[in-house]
Length: 184
Image (cartoon, rainbow, N blue to C red; front, side, top):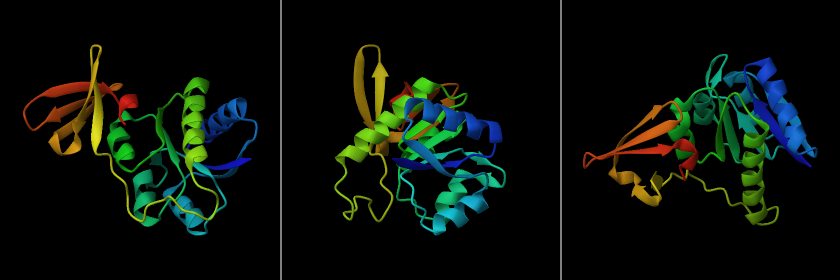
């Protein structure tokens, strides 16, 4: 059984997420639901027995990045939000996935499959693979037509989010477009 935490400020969004997770994985159980930065920090400091976190960006008393400044999270995080503006920041913090609302069963299932692939590669209990410092992306995947290539992060001057796309601007003056779902 997989136990997960929902950090979400909207009651109906929490219930929809739990329903979607239950529809794709009946053995996944919500262990806790909190709606604020303060409650999340307090809970996470207790070291709850959870395997996964679904985290909204905008909460009743701030945003989720305020949580990450106060506590270390040692379990995978799937961001669930209506805002595409935070996708790059979330991936820089080594998130598992970034789902845009309204959530769909297909999107939730794909995110869970990604979580399960990672979990199956992890060593047995007792051996930690979590680094003592944040792990940042070193490159961004770009798709142009039928071609794919990586841009090293040190070559990126700016990332701009618009609708479901992220525009990558390089120091050399080039502008590339990518779907943020392809950031890896």
